[in-house]
Image (cartoon, rainbow, N blue to C red; front, side, top):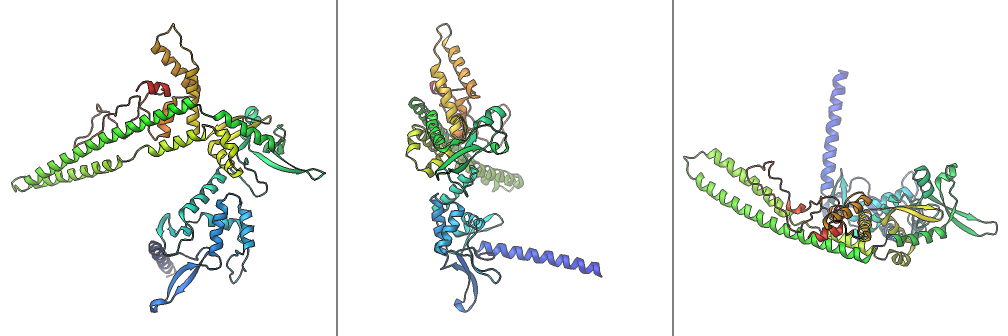
Length: 476
């Protein structure tokens, strides 16, 4: 009897849990709030229309302060600790409970609040988002700026609770990287002299454990070194113009290939319509096998759905990637002057956008690691300069001489610069050396054979690795 009761209780518990999960899912789909409303909202009862409805409304005491918290953090001038103190001074407190009185909002609570999409007017349940019935407290633009700022500080591994500086998280020890092969971050230290003077230094974290002999570096010298280093990543005018020409040609090729694909897909759809019409005429004859006719009609319908999907997808283009490349070219056309005009917060964002790491050695930036797509662009720029530096050899044929130039240039950067540039940045698999659109894969009812290696027209991209920008342009 005990075993039977235990089995029955287990079954009842499982069924109750499934019922509760279903009801919670339905409530989320209808825009209802699950559980207690977050800070800035209140769980209230709506007794209108002769019935009682539990809903969520804005907290008149805290809603504006929560919105102010998003706005202050988006400026980039506040850490989570600073924001907690500022909002506490302005009157923001947690909601009091029977066990706990109202108190200052903690840093962890603020971090969760700044990432919560509930304030956009949506409800999340099991990884899905539903439009909520509650009023949105902030807009998408403000929420996006806050997320970008949080992400930039997270990517840099920046901890700003004690000492603030816009270079924190971007500087690494060049001595440890060169001599020991170790990647170690540099940290900041404030020192007050006996006379009351304040000094700020960067030093390697390994120095705390006696594993690095690099000296402390004054923060002013580091700032000057980073500013001077920006001159080394500047792009030449000729390279910028060539990249723009290649991107324009790639966009033109993609547009031509898209038009060709659209025309051929439309022709295939018209052909399917004609076949379907013929089969319907045959279906009127009862003497013919109706089962085979219906099977052919189903095959035509499946083929039509496949072609319609491809016709819809052909609208995708390379314009977004092209705009990204153009933005990168503008940033690095004169980056040193741009860096000088930026505020400290803008410099921090610019450093983290362009550089993954800046290595400091002997009070100078001796090397760096660039983020994408700047790394690919800079590799192409290096190959471009190498090609321009090579002088023609009158004793060699022009074709062999050009091939050797391309091989020498690509060997310096570990691959074809144009393949990296257009294949990676424009979203293609490879970069085609011809400006003519390739043939389009148009499948009918019969499968393609291995002797027909056609590729999709939207992937107008197959160039031999090692093709430089100049070689690509000359092959057009």
